[in-house]
Amino acid sequence: MPNAAAPAEAFDAAAEFDRQVRTLVDLGYAGLSGRTPEDFRAALAPLRDQAVAAVAEGRAAPDTAAGRIPFVLVLTRAVAPVEETMPRTTLHGGRLPGFVDRSFEPGSLERFVAVKEAAEPAPDAYLLLDTERGEEFCGAVPREAMEVIAGRDRTLLTIEEGIALVTHFPQVLVKNKCFSLGGSRCGDRRVPAIWISKKAPKLGWCWEGNPHTWLGMASAGARRAAA
Image 1 (cartoon, rainbow, N blue to C red):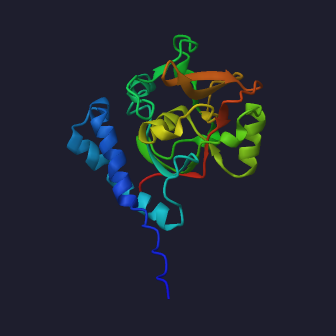
Image 2: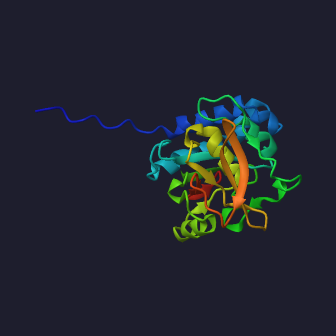
Image 3: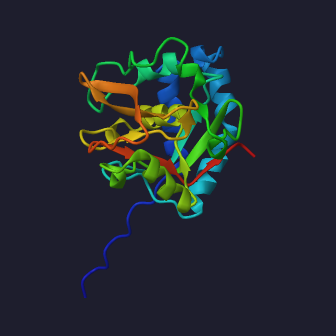
C-alpha cells in the first residue's frame, strides 16, 4: 500500500510575527519610534500571542502570489510617519526606495486619515487580519469596489496599512496587481493607492470614479490590538 501523502507543514505564526518585527528593526523603525531596538521589540511583544491566536482561528499561511496574508503588523503614523516609512519600502528583489508622489500637495497627506470604519484599534501598533490585495477589482470603479467590500463586512486598508503590507510582503506589489487604499480619505474624491513607478513603490492617489485596469482595492477582515 502506498504511503499516505505527508501533511503540509504547519504555518508558524510566531516565527512569522518575529520575522515582521525583525524587518521593522532592520529598517530603522525603532529609531523612528524613539526607542532602542530592545524597547521596540518589547513594545510589540504583546501582539505576538494575538498573531498566534489569529492563525489558530483558521487563517491560512501567506499566499503572496494571490495577495492573501493572514496578518500584518502595522505601526500607526503617530509612531512612524508616512513620509519616513514609504521610502523604506522596495519592490521584491528591488533596491530603489518607495516614494510619495508629488501630486500630494504640501500638507495634504496629513489630511488623509482613517475613515470611521477603518479606525485604528490602538494608538501605536496592531495587527491587520485576513488581508487581500483585491485584484478582482482591477478595472472597477473605486467607489463601487468600496461598496462591494463593505457589503462583505470587510474593511478597506488605510495608507499606513498599505505601506505595512508592502514592507512585510513586497511580493504582493506586482505589475497590473497594485491596489487602492480606500480606508484613508480627506473629504474629497481622491482615493490613495500604491503602485509601481520608476521601478519602485509609489504612494499616489486616483479619483474615486475613475477605474484603472492595474489598480484593485485592498481590504482586510479585521484589526486586532494587544489584549
